Length: 220
Ligand code: UDP
Ligand code: MG
Image 1 (cartoon, rainbow, N blue to C red):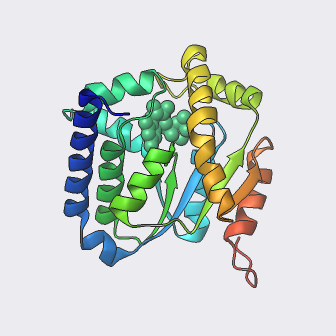
Image 2: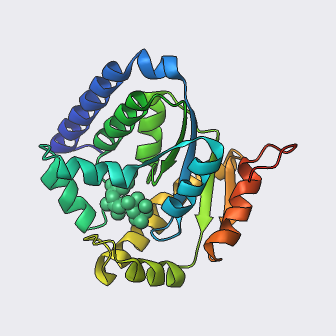
């Protein structure tokens, strides 16, 4: 049921998406990259394990959160909006995040990417598929209890404005309500590789390695 305001907003969003599509057209399609989405709650170990995968399997790691934080630092016109949303644990509009991801992929030169922390809701997912025309090879899902994630986030001290108890709880709620449905969607397509992420880093990586390693070869 669209009010006039809602319809106007939707139109503006669609225009922005189309613009992103045109900008990306040709080149991303030419690149036709291999993409693995890395998902899991805040503090589940996505970034840590991505660093391991990069080292051994030749992927490039793109963290959507890191790209957004870099965009804030660069003094972009969207900076204040992005910063306000991150402080509240809210999901930044798709067109912003997708543009940053597309740009990062095109600038990089590699054709294998780990996209970490995206898509965070169904709208992110559908928009990415529409605009970038990329389907992930699979989704790596780090499954971890909230208790353990909270302990890690409060202990990591990276100076992030969203690593405080209040924002952490909001991020958990957004993950449960908006991001888990994305994982369920890919699960229904047989694309989710779920990892028990409550274990120590080395043990988790053993499971990760088994997913990426070709069956007849050993990666060290
Ligand atoms: N964020 C977003 N869209 C994305 C990725 C991140 O809006 O695709 C925002 C969101 O506010 C999130 C914050 O950036 O809470 C931090 O995300 P990041 O992936 O760095 O951290 P995580 O919550 O996974 O630890
Ligand atoms: Mg991260």
